[in-house]
Image 1 (spheres, rainbow over the protein chains, first blue to last red):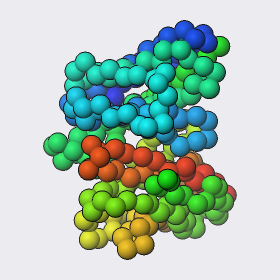
Image 2 (image 1 turned 90 degrees about the vertical axis):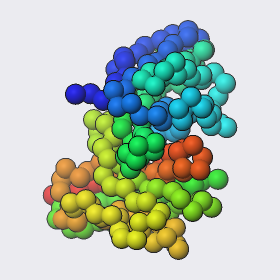
Image 3 (image 1 turned 90 degrees about the horizontal axis):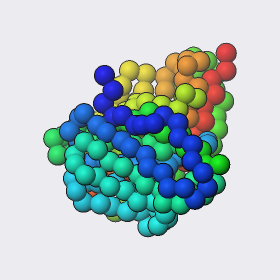
Length: 115
Length: 115
């Protein structure tokens, strides 16, 4: 059973057209992460939520925003996608609260294409 | 400043040989965690091994072991008896509990196992 679910698997958007990527989890983990991964590069942390506390990385462009309406769901909004935003977006969870923080649980990712 | 450094962009190793992938990290925190993840060409992130900063023994998981040298701030991954299926990207990552459990990745090492 999938525990961290990302939809859709592939997303195509147009230059400048807002797009939202979604992530849900059935693990009840309190920390959720969004990473951007370009081809043959490392996953780059964009932001993460520790419960409802939002942590933005200093070099995450303002074009990227996130929402976490409840424990299970987290969204990545790209307000005006540029060609350079084409990448794989990975959602991950962990749970330091209950001690299961020795592993990041990843979704299968959303591959974003910008035309 | 780079917090996770993987100095080997690529490695070629003969099948059945042992291989060591290097990882050094930088933190002033006393409490932290270190992960290794494998990413095959399919793109999924596969958890391999975890070492907590207070763990006195090196972590082991099957053919994987982590050579943790705290004073040198290194956390090298050792794969014994390498197999063709070990060909993949390998990422070292660090968890920082004092920063709301921020987890960042190194640039990775692409490992090629030769038959």
